[in-house]
Amino acid sequence: MSDSQPDRLALLEARLEQAERRLAAAEDQLALWRIVASYGPAVDSGSAEITAQLWTEEGVYDTFPVVLNGRDALRGMVNGDRHQALINNGAAHLMGLPHIVVDGDRAVVTNYSQLVLSAPDQNGYRIWRTGSNRWEFTRTDEGWKVTHRWNRQLDGTDEGRDLLARAVESEA
Image (cartoon, rainbow, N blue to C red):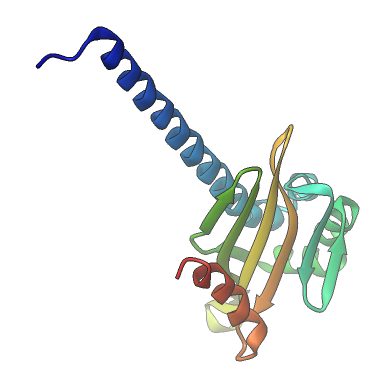
């Protein structure tokens, strides 16, 4: 039995639509991955404007106990004395692989991060902080932007583990 031309065309159109949806989903995941991956190089190079542009204008970075509200606060953090001292003495913000969930024009990314500092007295480096992160994104005319990022230390308290659990429990 041979397929009719209209049936074959309909099948090809359906396959093309499915491929386009899958490609769009993969492009979203890659875009979100790149944003999270760019955070470390942006803050470690002291690039305040690049860092701020990762967020929406009113986006929030909650890194307990400090909460930064809006791009101006993010620029201020990167340009501030404490951050400048860190990067001028040798610091690296390392981002772990992201767990990404996209739902239309919203997305949530969960990952680990470490802040590694130069330790010249030890002839090397030391891990100063290890945390979990929850990044919430919205799709804008300029692409994906962070609306809210929470960073909690994995120091034995519940907050850091809770951020990680929220990512995987929704898939169970």
